[in-house]
Length: 442
Image (cartoon, rainbow, N blue to C red; front, side, top):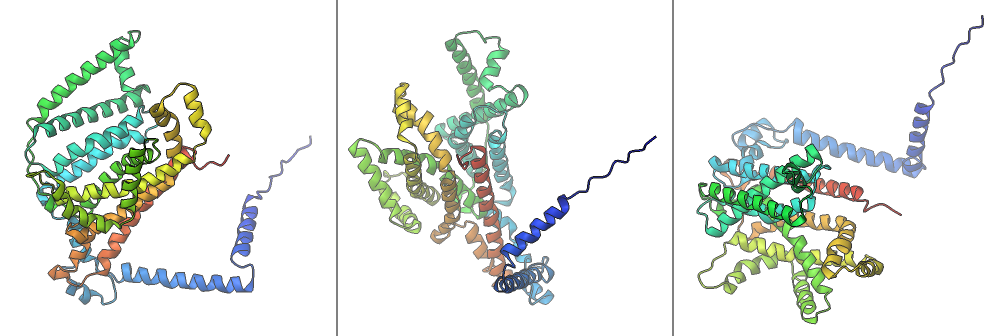
């Protein structure tokens, strides 16, 4: 009986991979004598840089000390990270009372939970989720951070925020468990699937009204200790200013861009003038003007604190830049899209909201995120007008008696924080581009 032996097929993937890598290295780094010498020189420079930073920032660094003198006693050439570690609470929370920091942490947790459905594919109504974050979250977070007495308007908005958050969470659960929107899930649970649309709408409105009444009665018993805005600072203040600016500048920019393209002469001239005035001056000038000129235009007895004035200035300034980004995106949409929308009977606002704007925003993602990153970094300018944001706190370390003269380490730590935030925003924008196929070539 003949015995047939199966020969093992040789694996050529590894040699092919090695060949391709060697070929790439030869083509890009060692294609000539000059390129080879240049590659070796650059590798040597990189080695010196990385090794020097490692020795200074880690090997010879001091992480535990009571003052800068102890850092020098431990190492004269290494970094003194002990001062940064000692000031971490101030860097992140400013001068916020230490026994009330839980309020900031709860506010951050609330925001994460509120926005969580945006990253879940099975959850419906994500546009409404984003809208509720922009409209309602600032009120409940603002009261959580500032505390004090609640006026009637603030009580209404806090109750509305509670209802919006509860609906958002219920909608997320319905989407994850049943792959349905909350409204469809409620109608199905009540057995009203075949009821007229008007009846279903009235049922949902009644349930919302009952939830609002319960939330209003519940929040009336809330009392939170007041914390003056002058104690806000650090990364917390930076994120508050930039977060509100980011959330408000995009809608403001859309409105200004549409106004600039309006056929009504008065609206177009006003929008163009507003945009060009704010784009013609630097942000620091706008901040100084806001803190000195806004009070002159307010009614007698009406006082805006400096933080509110700065936030308004940041929103107006960045809305003007965002308006030009949005206008560029609108101009990139072919004329046929407008004509097709009018052909099927859509009016101006439905054409913009359902056809034009979704396409334009997808193409504007890189520029929009670039503006957001610039806004995040520009908020450090508020330290010049007396607000202790993260940059103000980092500078204050060098003026603290135990750590006097400590400049490099705090600023490097701040640069690392900003890099993490900006890089995260950049990577997420790229993820959105891929997900929405905005960067796909046809």
